[in-house]
Image (tube, rainbow, N blue to C red):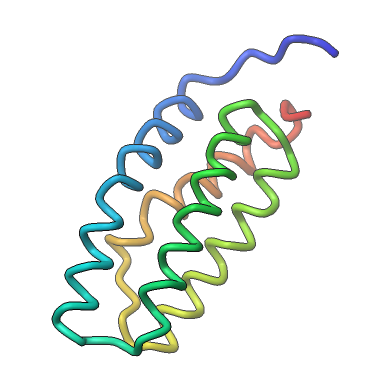
Length: 110
């Protein structure tokens, strides 16, 4: 197996996703305590956050499978947020940016 060099843009976006994941529990607790959403949304958002973190670690290691699952989860997030009437471009900006940048570097991934 050859050693892959990780592009700087992937490194920056992965680091931003890792940092953003630490703020997600605060958001979940705030949403659940204000009862703005359905009861299933908190556990759903927590599970998706963990899955996105795992995928981000895979993208950090330049794995195609991790990128593919990441794309599916980001797509699911867009659909769920739109369905709930809470679609927010600012909230989904960095994951969507990761999808776009990952597509550019997909051929360099294992």
